[in-house]
Length: 376
Image 1 (cartoon, rainbow, N blue to C red):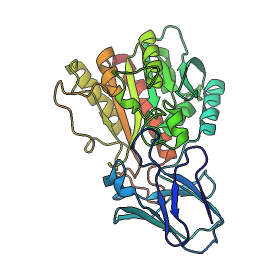
Image 2: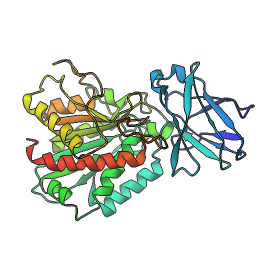
Image 3: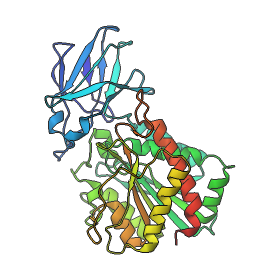
Image 4: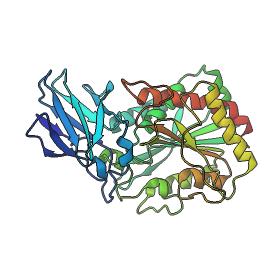
């Protein structure tokens, strides 16, 4: 049996693999940071039908140790079709077992979105979705941060920005972006045509390519949490945010969506800007309408569970959602998807996954189309 993680988004350390029924592993912390929770590794040389057991022994010291309750690890035999393996958190370790039907299997915290698929997605956007490469930034390690623009008419006045994967372990965020780009390829979509008659879309499919490639949970190559850098972005330590802020100030923002995943809460939800100093009845009404419309169209979304609301004037303005909403006086949301399942509509075999992330994105486009005329 061979356990490896020397690949895109791989993360594991082998502590003891001498007993296949009790393989002891550990998650590697982010570079230059204490955060860890993401794992992704391959097990080869297995005997189909034999039972194997795995323990992530440092799960109790991870960034969100409460998140392991109710969580099941993701697994795949082909890196294309992912399923969940019943898991349990006990004695500070995440434990799961499998009787494989093939000689090799991949395990991950969530269905990974690879850099190769990212490159394919950019190609799809440019070739089939009518996107253009509006600008391109660079990460600390020199990876491209593509800013795509979808513009159907020069008369479109509104600017809608959607960014994803500031936190690199939240791979559901780029699956969401794939859902957007997939729907944008339909030139006969009446809702999208109405949206694009009034708005330009600005998309950043992956804000943190270094962290994603390295198998980080939360930070970039400098150990910086990008979603805590929106008041202090620098070319040295957070060039990813610095680049996007420059482009926003060049273009303007009328709607901003920051796409994330939440480790603990088994629901899809949004976080808004109610704590911002500039929060107004107009913005409150827009937030309520956005949430209501998502519920009304039957999206996998709910409003009962989420983060505690900020008190007036007490927002953390280092977060993208709050910083952009305050600077541009616009409707601004963080959209959170679960690492577990959306408990309002559970799918035990897959839990929340890439397919459902894509579908949510397409529903969000419908809401944006319905609201584009009232954003200002």
